Amino acid sequence: MNLKMPDLSTTGSPIKVTRWLVEVGDFVERGQAVVEVETDKATMEVEALGFGTLLQQLVAAGGEASAGDLLAVIGDARAASGMPVTGNGRGGGEINYHRDFLLSLYERMVLVRQFEDRVRALFLEGIMPGTIHQCQGQEATAVGVCAALRSDDFITSTFRGHGHALAKGLTVQEMLDELFGAVTGCCRGKGGSMHIGNLEKGMMPAIAIVAGGIPLATGMALAFKLRKTKEIVACFFGDGAVAEGAFHEALNMAALWSLPVLFVCENNLYGASTRIDQVMKNTRVSDRAASYGFRGETVDGNDVLEVYEAATQAAEECRSGRGPVLLELQTYRRTGHSRRDPCHYQPKEERATWSANDPITRFAQALLVGGNADLDDLDRIQKEIDDEIERAVEKAKTAPKPVLSDLLTDVYAS
Image (cartoon, rainbow, N blue to C red; front, side):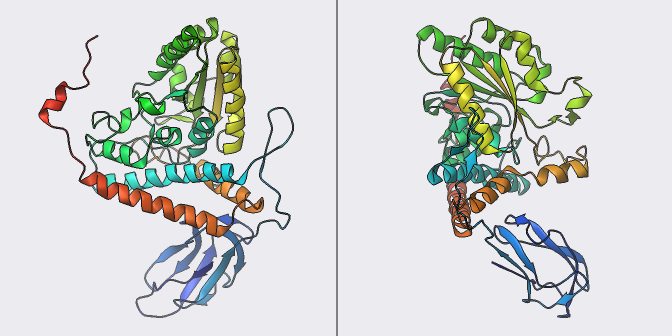
Protein backbone atom coordinates (compact mmCIF):
# COMPACT_ATOMS: atom_id res chain seq x y z
CA MET A 1 0.00 0.00 0.00
CA ASN A 2 1.34 3.42 -0.96
CA LEU A 3 0.92 6.54 1.17
CA LYS A 4 0.33 9.52 -1.10
CA MET A 5 0.33 13.22 -0.42
CA PRO A 6 -3.32 14.34 -0.25
CA ASP A 7 -4.48 17.47 -2.04
CA LEU A 8 -4.17 19.90 0.87
CA SER A 9 -2.79 23.10 -0.60
CA THR A 10 -5.26 25.74 -1.72
CA THR A 11 -2.70 27.25 -4.10
CA GLY A 12 -1.34 24.05 -5.62
CA SER A 13 2.14 24.78 -4.28
CA PRO A 14 4.36 21.97 -2.94
CA ILE A 15 3.65 20.75 0.58
CA LYS A 16 6.46 20.43 3.11
CA VAL A 17 7.05 17.26 5.15
CA THR A 18 7.82 18.59 8.63
CA ARG A 19 8.38 15.30 10.51
CA TRP A 20 7.71 11.57 10.40
CA LEU A 21 5.60 10.22 13.27
CA VAL A 22 6.65 6.57 12.75
CA GLU A 23 9.96 5.05 11.72
CA VAL A 24 10.81 2.52 9.02
CA GLY A 25 10.04 -0.92 10.42
CA ASP A 26 7.22 0.30 12.67
CA PHE A 27 3.80 -1.28 12.30
CA VAL A 28 0.94 1.12 11.62
CA GLU A 29 -2.80 0.59 11.75
CA ARG A 30 -5.51 2.08 9.62
CA GLY A 31 -6.23 5.68 10.63
CA GLN A 32 -2.91 6.12 12.45
CA ALA A 33 -1.09 9.40 11.81
CA VAL A 34 2.11 8.59 9.90
CA VAL A 35 3.59 11.93 8.85
CA GLU A 36 3.11 15.61 9.64
CA VAL A 37 2.99 18.05 6.72
CA GLU A 38 2.77 21.81 6.37
CA THR A 39 0.73 23.62 3.71
CA ASP A 40 0.48 27.30 2.92
CA LYS A 41 -2.35 27.50 5.47
CA ALA A 42 -1.82 24.96 8.24
CA THR A 43 0.10 22.02 9.70
CA MET A 44 -1.71 18.68 9.66
CA GLU A 45 -1.20 14.91 9.84
CA VAL A 46 -1.54 12.34 7.04
CA GLU A 47 -3.09 9.03 8.13
CA ALA A 48 -2.54 5.48 6.88
CA LEU A 49 -5.42 3.98 4.91
CA GLY A 50 -4.65 0.41 5.95
CA PHE A 51 -2.50 -1.89 8.07
CA GLY A 52 1.15 -2.69 7.49
CA THR A 53 4.79 -2.03 8.23
CA LEU A 54 6.39 1.23 7.13
CA LEU A 55 8.90 -0.06 4.61
CA GLN A 56 10.15 3.20 3.06
CA GLN A 57 10.04 6.94 3.63
CA LEU A 58 10.28 8.47 0.16
CA VAL A 59 10.37 12.12 1.25
CA ALA A 60 12.65 13.08 4.10
CA ALA A 61 11.68 15.52 6.82
CA GLY A 62 12.19 19.01 5.41
CA GLY A 63 11.49 17.87 1.86
CA GLU A 64 8.54 18.86 -0.32
CA ALA A 65 5.98 16.96 -2.39
CA SER A 66 2.98 17.79 -4.50
CA ALA A 67 -0.52 16.33 -4.23
CA GLY A 68 -0.50 12.72 -5.41
CA ASP A 69 3.23 12.18 -4.90
CA LEU A 70 4.32 9.05 -3.01
CA LEU A 71 5.36 9.74 0.57
CA ALA A 72 5.91 6.20 1.84
CA VAL A 73 5.47 2.52 1.15
CA ILE A 74 3.50 0.51 3.71
CA GLY A 75 3.58 -3.24 3.18
CA ASP A 76 3.92 -6.73 4.59
CA ALA A 77 7.23 -7.32 6.35
CA ARG A 78 6.29 -10.60 8.05
CA ALA A 79 8.99 -13.16 8.61
CA ALA A 80 9.74 -15.56 5.75
CA SER A 81 9.71 -18.52 8.14
CA GLY A 82 5.91 -18.54 8.33
CA MET A 83 5.96 -19.74 11.93
CA PRO A 84 2.50 -19.91 13.54
CA VAL A 85 1.51 -17.58 16.37
CA THR A 86 2.22 -19.23 19.70
CA GLY A 87 0.92 -18.63 23.17
CA ASN A 88 2.70 -18.84 26.50
CA GLY A 89 1.24 -22.18 27.49
CA ARG A 90 0.09 -22.22 31.11
CA GLY A 91 2.04 -25.42 31.70
CA GLY A 92 5.29 -23.83 30.58
CA GLY A 93 5.41 -24.94 26.93
CA GLU A 94 4.41 -23.11 23.78
CA ILE A 95 1.00 -23.65 22.19
CA ASN A 96 0.39 -23.39 18.45
CA TYR A 97 -3.02 -22.10 17.46
CA HIS A 98 -5.06 -22.80 14.36
CA ARG A 99 -5.25 -19.90 11.92
CA ASP A 100 -9.07 -19.82 11.98
CA PHE A 101 -9.11 -19.46 15.75
CA LEU A 102 -6.56 -16.65 15.66
CA LEU A 103 -8.47 -14.78 12.98
CA SER A 104 -11.69 -15.20 14.97
CA LEU A 105 -10.06 -13.47 17.96
CA TYR A 106 -8.81 -10.65 15.74
CA GLU A 107 -12.18 -10.27 14.04
CA ARG A 108 -14.02 -10.09 17.36
CA MET A 109 -11.64 -7.44 18.72
CA VAL A 110 -12.00 -5.34 15.57
CA LEU A 111 -15.78 -5.72 15.82
CA VAL A 112 -15.73 -4.32 19.36
CA ARG A 113 -13.48 -1.39 18.38
CA GLN A 114 -15.44 -0.43 15.25
CA PHE A 115 -18.79 -0.84 17.00
CA GLU A 116 -17.66 1.51 19.76
CA ASP A 117 -16.24 4.03 17.29
CA ARG A 118 -19.48 4.05 15.28
CA VAL A 119 -21.64 4.41 18.40
CA ARG A 120 -19.51 7.31 19.57
CA ALA A 121 -20.01 9.05 16.23
CA LEU A 122 -23.79 8.53 16.48
CA PHE A 123 -23.82 10.20 19.89
CA LEU A 124 -21.67 13.09 18.73
CA GLU A 125 -24.07 13.61 15.83
CA GLY A 126 -27.00 13.71 18.30
CA ILE A 127 -28.67 10.75 16.60
CA MET A 128 -28.60 8.23 19.46
CA PRO A 129 -30.37 8.82 22.81
CA GLY A 130 -29.09 8.17 26.32
CA THR A 131 -25.45 7.97 27.33
CA ILE A 132 -22.48 5.65 26.81
CA HIS A 133 -19.42 4.33 28.64
CA GLN A 134 -17.05 2.82 26.10
CA CYS A 135 -14.19 0.33 26.08
CA GLN A 136 -11.84 1.24 23.20
CA GLY A 137 -8.44 -0.15 24.16
CA GLN A 138 -9.85 -2.96 26.33
CA GLU A 139 -10.92 -5.34 23.54
CA ALA A 140 -8.51 -8.14 24.47
CA THR A 141 -9.95 -8.53 27.97
CA ALA A 142 -13.51 -9.22 26.84
CA VAL A 143 -12.57 -11.31 23.81
CA GLY A 144 -9.87 -13.34 25.55
CA VAL A 145 -12.06 -14.25 28.53
CA CYS A 146 -15.22 -15.05 26.56
CA ALA A 147 -13.26 -17.20 24.10
CA ALA A 148 -12.32 -19.40 27.06
CA LEU A 149 -15.95 -19.92 28.13
CA ARG A 150 -18.44 -22.52 26.97
CA SER A 151 -21.69 -21.48 25.33
CA ASP A 152 -23.66 -22.44 28.47
CA ASP A 153 -21.45 -20.37 30.78
CA PHE A 154 -22.63 -16.93 31.91
CA ILE A 155 -21.08 -13.51 32.33
CA THR A 156 -22.06 -10.49 34.37
CA SER A 157 -21.09 -7.03 33.22
CA THR A 158 -20.94 -3.33 34.06
CA PHE A 159 -22.02 0.00 32.58
CA ARG A 160 -19.01 -0.43 30.21
CA GLY A 161 -20.42 -3.61 28.71
CA HIS A 162 -20.59 -3.32 24.91
CA GLY A 163 -17.36 -5.29 24.45
CA HIS A 164 -18.46 -8.02 26.85
CA ALA A 165 -21.75 -8.38 24.97
CA LEU A 166 -20.16 -8.65 21.53
CA ALA A 167 -17.54 -11.08 22.85
CA LYS A 168 -20.27 -13.29 24.38
CA GLY A 169 -22.11 -13.51 21.08
CA LEU A 170 -24.72 -10.77 21.07
CA THR A 171 -25.25 -9.43 17.56
CA VAL A 172 -24.55 -5.93 16.32
CA GLN A 173 -28.18 -5.59 15.28
CA GLU A 174 -29.78 -6.50 18.61
CA MET A 175 -27.38 -4.20 20.43
CA LEU A 176 -27.88 -1.20 18.14
CA ASP A 177 -31.64 -1.73 18.29
CA GLU A 178 -31.35 -1.64 22.08
CA LEU A 179 -29.26 1.53 22.03
CA PHE A 180 -31.87 3.19 19.84
CA GLY A 181 -34.58 2.11 22.32
CA ALA A 182 -36.36 -0.29 19.95
CA VAL A 183 -38.54 -3.23 21.00
CA THR A 184 -36.36 -5.43 18.78
CA GLY A 185 -33.36 -4.74 21.03
CA CYS A 186 -31.81 -7.44 23.18
CA CYS A 187 -33.65 -6.03 26.24
CA ARG A 188 -36.67 -4.82 24.23
CA GLY A 189 -35.52 -1.23 24.45
CA LYS A 190 -35.72 -1.12 28.25
CA GLY A 191 -32.06 -1.59 29.13
CA GLY A 192 -30.11 0.73 26.90
CA SER A 193 -26.34 0.98 26.89
CA MET A 194 -25.72 0.45 30.61
CA HIS A 195 -27.98 -2.61 30.95
CA ILE A 196 -27.16 -4.56 27.80
CA GLY A 197 -27.56 -8.33 27.92
CA ASN A 198 -29.26 -11.47 26.62
CA LEU A 199 -29.92 -14.41 28.92
CA GLU A 200 -30.28 -16.82 26.00
CA LYS A 201 -26.68 -16.07 25.06
CA GLY A 202 -25.31 -16.29 28.57
CA MET A 203 -25.14 -12.62 29.50
CA MET A 204 -27.09 -11.24 32.41
CA PRO A 205 -28.26 -7.68 31.68
CA ALA A 206 -25.43 -5.47 32.87
CA ILE A 207 -25.61 -3.62 36.19
CA ALA A 208 -24.59 0.04 36.29
CA ILE A 209 -24.00 0.14 40.06
CA VAL A 210 -20.27 -0.17 40.75
CA ALA A 211 -19.58 -3.73 42.02
CA GLY A 212 -23.29 -4.56 41.65
CA GLY A 213 -22.64 -7.57 39.46
CA ILE A 214 -20.15 -9.22 41.82
CA PRO A 215 -22.60 -10.59 44.44
CA LEU A 216 -24.97 -11.49 41.61
CA ALA A 217 -22.25 -13.62 39.99
CA THR A 218 -21.53 -15.30 43.33
CA GLY A 219 -25.23 -16.11 43.73
CA MET A 220 -25.39 -17.54 40.21
CA ALA A 221 -22.33 -19.68 40.92
CA LEU A 222 -24.00 -20.97 44.10
CA ALA A 223 -27.03 -21.98 42.02
CA PHE A 224 -24.79 -23.85 39.55
CA LYS A 225 -23.13 -25.72 42.42
CA LEU A 226 -26.44 -26.65 44.06
CA ARG A 227 -27.78 -27.89 40.71
CA LYS A 228 -24.56 -29.90 40.21
CA THR A 229 -24.07 -28.49 36.70
CA LYS A 230 -20.72 -27.70 35.09
CA GLU A 231 -21.55 -24.09 34.27
CA ILE A 232 -19.41 -21.24 35.54
CA VAL A 233 -19.90 -17.47 35.62
CA ALA A 234 -17.29 -14.91 34.65
CA CYS A 235 -17.81 -11.61 36.46
CA PHE A 236 -16.37 -8.48 34.83
CA PHE A 237 -15.71 -5.37 36.93
CA GLY A 238 -13.30 -2.44 37.03
CA ASP A 239 -10.58 -1.55 39.50
CA GLY A 240 -12.90 0.99 41.13
CA ALA A 241 -15.17 -1.83 42.30
CA VAL A 242 -12.41 -3.23 44.54
CA ALA A 243 -13.11 -0.45 47.06
CA GLU A 244 -16.75 -1.52 47.48
CA GLY A 245 -17.89 -3.77 50.31
CA ALA A 246 -19.83 -5.92 47.85
CA PHE A 247 -16.53 -6.98 46.27
CA HIS A 248 -15.06 -8.27 49.53
CA GLU A 249 -18.26 -9.91 50.78
CA ALA A 250 -18.86 -11.73 47.50
CA LEU A 251 -15.25 -12.95 47.20
CA ASN A 252 -15.31 -14.20 50.78
CA MET A 253 -18.56 -16.10 50.22
CA ALA A 254 -17.33 -17.59 46.93
CA ALA A 255 -14.17 -18.77 48.67
CA LEU A 256 -15.99 -20.27 51.67
CA TRP A 257 -18.29 -22.31 49.44
CA SER A 258 -15.75 -23.04 46.65
CA LEU A 259 -18.05 -21.58 44.03
CA PRO A 260 -17.44 -21.77 40.27
CA VAL A 261 -17.00 -18.04 39.63
CA LEU A 262 -14.19 -16.35 37.71
CA PHE A 263 -13.74 -12.80 38.98
CA VAL A 264 -12.30 -10.64 36.18
CA CYS A 265 -10.96 -7.22 37.15
CA GLU A 266 -10.33 -5.02 34.11
CA ASN A 267 -7.75 -2.77 35.72
CA ASN A 268 -7.57 0.26 33.40
CA LEU A 269 -5.87 2.36 36.12
CA TYR A 270 -8.79 4.76 36.61
CA GLY A 271 -12.01 4.65 38.60
CA ALA A 272 -13.80 7.40 36.66
CA SER A 273 -11.12 10.14 36.86
CA THR A 274 -9.22 8.88 39.93
CA ARG A 275 -6.01 6.94 39.38
CA ILE A 276 -5.69 3.64 41.23
CA ASP A 277 -2.53 4.61 43.14
CA GLN A 278 -4.43 7.49 44.77
CA VAL A 279 -6.87 5.11 46.47
CA MET A 280 -4.85 1.90 47.00
CA LYS A 281 -1.52 1.33 48.72
CA ASN A 282 -1.25 -2.08 47.10
CA THR A 283 -2.28 -1.56 43.47
CA ARG A 284 -1.91 -5.24 42.55
CA VAL A 285 -5.59 -6.21 42.63
CA SER A 286 -4.95 -9.95 42.29
CA ASP A 287 -3.28 -9.97 45.73
CA ARG A 288 -6.76 -9.60 47.29
CA ALA A 289 -7.54 -13.23 46.45
CA ALA A 290 -4.98 -14.50 48.97
CA SER A 291 -6.88 -12.71 51.73
CA TYR A 292 -9.79 -15.07 51.14
CA GLY A 293 -7.80 -18.23 50.44
CA PHE A 294 -7.96 -18.67 46.68
CA ARG A 295 -5.75 -18.03 43.67
CA GLY A 296 -5.22 -14.65 42.03
CA GLU A 297 -3.19 -13.79 38.94
CA THR A 298 -2.19 -10.58 37.16
CA VAL A 299 -2.13 -10.77 33.37
CA ASP A 300 -1.24 -8.46 30.47
CA GLY A 301 -4.77 -7.49 29.51
CA ASN A 302 -3.67 -6.17 26.10
CA ASP A 303 -2.36 -9.58 24.99
CA VAL A 304 -5.42 -11.49 23.84
CA LEU A 305 -3.68 -14.88 23.84
CA GLU A 306 -2.28 -14.39 27.33
CA VAL A 307 -5.77 -13.43 28.53
CA TYR A 308 -7.29 -16.45 26.76
CA GLU A 309 -4.78 -18.87 28.27
CA ALA A 310 -5.14 -17.47 31.78
CA ALA A 311 -8.94 -17.53 31.52
CA THR A 312 -8.92 -21.08 30.13
CA GLN A 313 -6.89 -22.34 33.07
CA ALA A 314 -9.01 -20.40 35.57
CA ALA A 315 -12.28 -21.62 34.03
CA GLU A 316 -11.10 -25.21 34.31
CA GLU A 317 -10.24 -24.69 37.98
CA CYS A 318 -13.70 -23.25 38.64
CA ARG A 319 -15.44 -25.98 36.68
CA SER A 320 -13.60 -28.80 38.45
CA GLY A 321 -14.71 -27.69 41.92
CA ARG A 322 -11.50 -25.98 43.04
CA GLY A 323 -13.31 -22.74 43.81
CA PRO A 324 -13.05 -19.20 42.46
CA VAL A 325 -10.15 -17.45 40.73
CA LEU A 326 -9.41 -13.72 40.56
CA LEU A 327 -7.85 -12.54 37.29
CA GLU A 328 -6.53 -8.99 37.14
CA LEU A 329 -6.22 -7.89 33.51
CA GLN A 330 -4.03 -4.81 33.15
CA THR A 331 -5.36 -2.63 30.35
CA TYR A 332 -6.21 0.96 29.47
CA ARG A 333 -9.25 2.73 28.08
CA ARG A 334 -8.53 5.12 25.24
CA THR A 335 -11.71 7.11 25.85
CA GLY A 336 -13.13 9.07 28.74
CA HIS A 337 -15.13 7.54 31.56
CA SER A 338 -18.31 8.54 29.71
CA ARG A 339 -19.07 10.37 26.50
CA ARG A 340 -18.68 13.86 28.01
CA ASP A 341 -15.30 13.13 29.61
CA PRO A 342 -12.35 14.68 27.69
CA CYS A 343 -9.86 12.55 29.66
CA HIS A 344 -7.59 15.43 30.65
CA TYR A 345 -6.56 13.60 33.83
CA GLN A 346 -4.64 10.99 31.81
CA PRO A 347 -1.05 12.23 31.28
CA LYS A 348 0.00 12.53 27.63
CA GLU A 349 3.05 10.32 28.17
CA GLU A 350 0.91 7.62 29.77
CA ARG A 351 -1.59 7.72 26.92
CA ALA A 352 1.21 7.48 24.36
CA THR A 353 2.74 4.48 26.11
CA TRP A 354 -0.53 2.59 26.22
CA SER A 355 -1.44 3.58 22.65
CA ALA A 356 1.80 1.94 21.53
CA ASN A 357 0.59 -1.17 23.37
CA ASP A 358 -2.79 -1.27 21.62
CA PRO A 359 -4.20 -4.84 21.75
CA ILE A 360 -5.49 -4.88 18.16
CA THR A 361 -2.30 -3.48 16.63
CA ARG A 362 -0.17 -5.92 18.66
CA PHE A 363 -2.21 -8.92 17.59
CA ALA A 364 -2.36 -7.82 13.95
CA GLN A 365 1.41 -7.59 13.90
CA ALA A 366 1.71 -11.05 15.48
CA LEU A 367 -0.60 -12.50 12.82
CA LEU A 368 1.42 -10.92 10.02
CA VAL A 369 4.81 -11.95 11.41
CA GLY A 370 3.58 -15.46 12.17
CA GLY A 371 2.24 -15.92 8.66
CA ASN A 372 -1.33 -16.49 9.81
CA ALA A 373 -2.69 -13.48 7.92
CA ASP A 374 -1.67 -10.97 5.29
CA LEU A 375 -2.70 -7.37 4.78
CA ASP A 376 -5.55 -8.39 2.48
CA ASP A 377 -6.99 -10.60 5.24
CA LEU A 378 -6.92 -7.76 7.76
CA ASP A 379 -8.37 -5.22 5.32
CA ARG A 380 -11.13 -7.66 4.34
CA ILE A 381 -12.11 -8.23 7.96
CA GLN A 382 -12.27 -4.50 8.62
CA LYS A 383 -14.38 -3.83 5.53
CA GLU A 384 -16.82 -6.64 6.26
CA ILE A 385 -17.30 -5.38 9.81
CA ASP A 386 -17.74 -1.79 8.61
CA ASP A 387 -20.43 -2.95 6.18
CA GLU A 388 -22.19 -5.05 8.83
CA ILE A 389 -22.30 -2.15 11.28
CA GLU A 390 -23.56 0.34 8.69
CA ARG A 391 -26.39 -2.00 7.64
CA ALA A 392 -27.34 -2.48 11.29
CA VAL A 393 -27.27 1.28 11.98
CA GLU A 394 -29.67 2.03 9.14
CA LYS A 395 -32.03 -0.73 10.25
CA ALA A 396 -31.87 0.33 13.92
CA LYS A 397 -32.78 3.93 13.08
CA THR A 398 -36.22 2.80 11.88
CA ALA A 399 -36.74 -0.12 14.27
CA PRO A 400 -40.12 -0.04 16.10
CA LYS A 401 -40.23 1.77 19.44
CA PRO A 402 -42.14 0.56 22.53
CA VAL A 403 -45.76 1.60 23.00
CA LEU A 404 -47.41 2.70 26.24
CA SER A 405 -48.71 -0.79 27.06
CA ASP A 406 -45.15 -2.13 27.02
CA LEU A 407 -44.66 -0.46 30.41
CA LEU A 408 -46.54 -3.41 31.93
CA THR A 409 -44.66 -6.20 30.14
CA ASP A 410 -41.68 -8.02 31.63
CA VAL A 411 -42.40 -6.58 35.08
CA TYR A 412 -42.03 -8.87 38.07
CA ALA A 413 -43.15 -8.48 41.66
CA SER A 414 -40.53 -9.08 44.36
